[in-house]
Image (cartoon, rainbow, N blue to C red; front, side):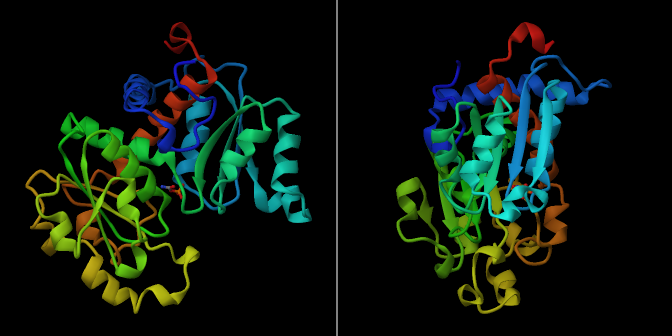
Length: 311
Ligand code: CP
């Protein structure tokens, strides 16, 4: 197997060489989505289950599209209509699903560590599609791929990540991924939303938005995760937008060829203005396009597709 582990649980587990292999593989699969017939036989006969315990638009859909473009059978489990609502434990649900012999289970869950726990119980491949505030590895991979495509490198870039760092699995995965590949990562946000010790992941903390984005090559804006916090972290959304939101005025402090990323979903007018989100520096929709390619690459590398069958 080209990757060390049978599962994709976090960026933490990936070496720089493995990340580069995933990006190169994703680049080669990206072209499939531009074809008139968007399908290759690479994973014919394989079964992939999407098990999402939290809402998702981009991640769930792109894992499903990636599986289908590779000719795998993709099954989506809606937890609200599954036996989880009758009290079945996650472990029992997963073991029952595995008894149907899938090759891969893609899981999103509100609790950090859920994919790791499943990977210990299950023989099939487990992919983490976001676990609590812990990791969202496929998101970070598609973010880094988008920057690599645009800038041609990661090493030496200044990457500013701004917003609700505390509750963001995207921030955690990106800090580890970008710093491991040689970027300088700076985070900022309200003091109440910057976890103590975040520097240990490979970043520095800036005191305000302007300091963070000054000369930044990449700015990643994050949504405030109101579903993971009470009201106590922020005085008001209006104040948040003024101090930490990105608009055209603050963008003037960034470098001339800055690129703007956001994992979505966007709260327009809160962490990012519509002018910036839809403006010339934004690669937000390119991130979504690359999400399909990254997920195809992960399936290919983890489930053992062959180059001959990918044409
Ligand atoms: N970026 C992301 O995880 O979006 P979804 O919640 O829509 O999957």
